[in-house]
Structure formats: structure tokens, C-alpha cells
Image (cartoon, rainbow, N blue to C red; front, side, top):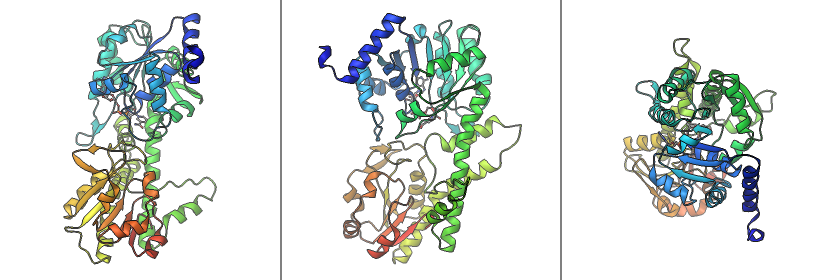
Length: 455
Ligand SMILES: NC(=O)c1ccc[n+]([C@@H]2O[C@H](COP(=O)([O-])OP(=O)(O)OC[C@H]3O[C@@H](n4cnc5c(N)ncnc54)[C@H](O)[C@@H]3O)[C@@H](O)[C@H]2O)c1
């Protein structure tokens, strides 16, 4: 039997035997099985922990228990690893919080959006998850917040709820740390394992216990700090990136106005030491970047009012509307009005080769096109449905009789589009590129009207 088992399963069986012989197998619960929680649960299960994943969505739980990943983008190794740990019994999913009663480790990885109307974090999921954990917490367990939160959340929200619900004292009767994730769709497992990680406990013992835990799955450095610093580090990392992208977008707009190519400018700027100009584009999306700057600003409120990161948000948020203006301009050059034009939007996911549509700039673009009176048709190879928008699965159908193709997401499929074929199918040969997928010179040579962000 064993001799026939594939190498990976054999490795898992050996790890399990090791755990059983050397110590009682540690029980670990992951609360929230989304883009981050699922890979985390899978990696700890692979490392030999007895893992239970908890989620409030029954369909997701059902899929995971069948060994099927709810994440549909290109996610190297996740599908195989999930199948393997589910079939070996080291990972189970459930909607019940009961398994927390026996858990030695509880990792909370729920979504933490920001409410732009009230200008505060929308912590419904976090509060509810922390409450449920508190109600079932075992004395001596280690609780870790992996979700990205505003600085101060541990002290103001997590500790009070956990102590009130459990009747236990944080730092004495249970340990508590924050260890924000640095993963991103498309590289979930790779980032989780290989990137350095900051781990901040509410006391020394919590920090050390959390570091010992992550050593089982993280090959990168584990940097100890306190919980508040870890919260600031995570939100600052993303605010930094957002500001850098806004800077690149500003230079892109400048290049468009003066007739230069921002990509060439960027390449040459980055030849100068200590420069690392980011890529401009159609806008910034995803669950994290658009809200983490606001989480940081919210955490700092009263201390100061960050101006640069607010301006960066404004610039990045304006990019999809700028893309819609480029469509108007390009169509005009082709002799077609935007009103009534069929515009094909390539990509609704916010990131290439991902199915994640959260805060995608494509939504703002589609809305702007509709306001202009255009008829947007959306194509995406990885997304079935998004906010009620119908997704055309056939690229040819999406392009047929189109007056303008506007690219938002640089999915691999779009790099291979044959321009002759595209032109034959389209009613008006117009391309607007939000990501530098199409070659400008080639587009001109084939007879297209072309516009591109920063080109
Ligand atoms: N997506 C990323 O690339 C990424 C990267 C780094 C950090 N983060 C951070 O990680 C956190 C999670 O992000 P995500 O992208 O995995 O979100 P997600 O929406 O994909 O996953 C969250 C999961 O938690 C579940 N959930 C919500 N409330 C729950 C509750 N009370 N009990 C149990 N399950 C509950 C949801 O049903 C969902 O499946 C966020 O704070 C995010 O900012 C995300």
C-alpha cells in the first residue's frame, strides 16, 4: 500500500507518524477560509498539524471538504496540496466554532474592509470572529490575528472582546499576537512560505510562541516585535506601495500630455541608484491596497492627518475614469462617438490571472462608460460573475462588432491576442491599453487607433 503512495502523500504520512510518536498532535484552527486563510490552513496541515478551517459560508466549506479550491485563478500548487491534506484527513472544514474548544492555536484571517462613507474600518467580520473565538477559547491557547487591521485594533478591539467572552486574561491565561500576511493572489503559497514575516505579540511570551509556530511553515526570517508595531508595519507596507503607484501614475499622465512613453522613462529612471519607480496602470484594486492606507490613517487619527497617502488614493482612484476618457478620445479619432458604441472590456479581476474582483478598477471604468452612453461587454477568463455584471466567456463573442477594446487586466490570455484576427472581428479598430499588453507600434502598423496609459 505504502509503496504505491505518491511521494507527497508518503511524506505527509511520515510527518503524521512523527507527530504521533514525538508529541500529541497539535490542534490548529483557522477562522476564515478566503484567499489567505485557505493557503494558511493547507500549509499547517501539510506540516502535520491537525487543522480545522472554519468559515461562515457553507458552500465554501463543502467545496473544501471535497478537496476543491474555491479560488479559481492561477494559484500554483494550491489545488494539489488541498486535495492531498483533505484526503489524508489533516484538514477539515466546518461552519461550527466547536473545534476551537480543543485548539492549541487559533488563527483569525477574516476580511477587514474600510467603510468609505463613515471613514472607519468595517469590522463586522473581525468582531464576530473574535467573539466566537472568545466564547470557545481553551486556557493556554495562542490566538493570532493574521488579518490586516488599523493600528491600535489589538488593544482597543481584540483584547477587550476576547477577555470579555472567554473570562480569561490575555497574555496570562491565553497568548495573543498579530502576524499580518504578505501574500498576494497568484503567489499565495510561495509568499506565505518564502517571505520574511513580522510577528508582534502582546507580551514576550506571545511573540515567542507565535514565532515558534510559524517556523513550521515559513522559510523566511521571522522578525519579533510588539503588536502595535506589527499593525503599523503591515498597513505602512501597503500605503507605501499605493503611494509609489500613484507617483508612477502621475508621471504616466505627464508623459501622455507631452507625448513621451512612461515605460521607457521608468526603465531609465530605475537605472539611477536607489530609484525603484513602480508601474503605472488602469488603477489599483484588490481587498488590500485600496483600504490599507485608510486603515493606517484611521489608526493614526488624532495624532495627525496623513496628506500624502490620501492624495495617492485620489490619484489611483482616478485612473479608471481616465481610461474611459482615453476610450472617448480614441473613438473620436476613429470617427465614432462613444454614445451607443460597443466597448469590450478585457479583464474584470483586479490582478492578472486571478479571479479576485474586489475593488477592481474595471467597475469604475464600466460605470463611466455607461454614463457616456456606451455599451460595455466584459470578458474575463477567470471570473464567472461580478456584482451582477454578465461576463462573456468567449473572447471572440466579446470582441465581435466591437468599436473599442479596452484592456484593464493583463491576464496571460490577452498577451497572445492576434491583432489581425482582432481587427477582422471588430467593427471599429480601436485599442485602449491600461497595462502595456499591446505593442503600440504594431497596433499602428495593423491600422488600429491606439491609446495607452502613459503612452
Ligand atoms: N487577499 C490578499 O491578497 C491579502 C494579502 C495580505 C493580507 N490580507 C488580509 O487578510 C485578511 C483576509 O483577506 P482575504 O483576502 O483572505 O479575505 P476573504 O474575503 O477572501 O476571506 C475571508 C473569509 O472569512 C470568512 N469569514 C468572515 N467572517 C467570518 C466569521 N465570523 N467566522 C468565520 N469565517 C468568517 C469569509 O466568509 C471569507 O471566506 C484581510 O484582513 C486582508 O486585508 C489579504
